Length: 534
Ligand SMILES: [Ca+2]
Image (cartoon, rainbow, N blue to C red; front, side, top):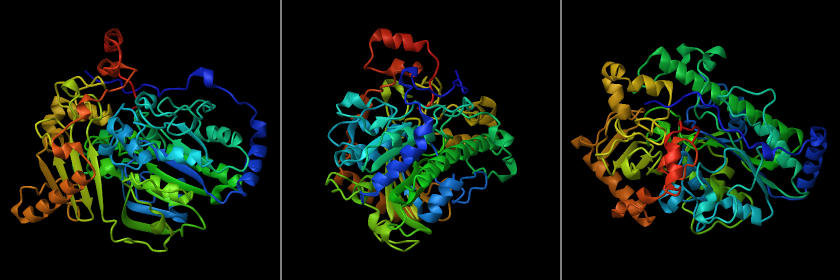
């Protein structure tokens, strides 16, 4: 059974189309610019792509992408080489970013298709309460049902998704015109108010237009295939199509930056560009290796953040909530696990800046529903500049969901997104041709993994059983366990609340696993195809 790989992305309901009058755009932008001059607080533009790994930018040296907008933010601001998401899955990553807390501290916010408990509201609500005009376009928090947990208002403010590209773009790309929706948002901004805007691209999430990268002039010869994937033309083409969606996303970012610049607002705006989790390829997204959790991150705020810097300190997505509240002059809740990056950003230094920012913690419980009874894949990770330590709490389970259970994606190995590389690697013939690669991407994993990232940047040579590294391993496990105990992680106490959390998918085949639906609704979902994106 295989997933359809060419479904169009969702389009907004026709009923929300509104606000014509493009001729007023210039005037509205101009007046908005005048109004903002009275308020010393910065605007905040938070740009989150979907499924882009840390090295998927020109600034990071990737020869297959062209990302002038990201590179500009990096060049005129600060680029982080060691930024990490809290979890390599959309919903938990976004929940953690918005609440400033680790995924094991936010209940049902910590699983795909979960919800957001009101106990720890997103930082955006504090901005709104302080007078910020808040809105979003594209993909916001999710997928999931934010209302179900009792949060009293949307995590990101008002939705702006009415504007679609004209002429229509490839069905593989998001039909929504992020920049035009941003124009609508600015037009509705009350005079004298700073804004918070979330630009949530659905690129480079799959699906891709097959061959789009090659048709755009990208070359297979420029692709560097890591040692855990078969080095074939099919895999290189899949990577070029990923690169092409990154280019598209970057072009949309460029348009939004140009809008701000034309309105005289760009230099009054704190711009953050990152992604939610890593690239949708095996052993990347939904893994705690670098391609799953290490993120692009650039932050620009002229006058307050000295630009032209590359910082090697560890920065975490959970640091963004306190950073942005501090930038707006607001108090940072004691409940936050993240720490404000503002002192580091305001310094003039590059390289290693703050000695304490030398490690990252990340985790995964459940991505898709890909094991019987909603069993999760519990794993915790600790990354330093030298080592990656991973703890697989249930090593008897398949990290991908395995070859026998039909997942919510209507595939086997459901935690690997439907893709050309998935179909290729999972075919019986290619499992025989590429056994080492298959084992690295799909095989079960031992209780402990330890990689020396200085000599093993691809994290494929597990040293956990090597006596020469026994002391390092013991020290990292001790540190990881201590951190999780201090921060209230049920997993290290032997408890598992996650398996019981509902999987709140309502569209496509995956809804058959949604326990909040009636039996009849779930039966009806069983006959449907898979649904993307998620
Ligand atoms: Ca994602």
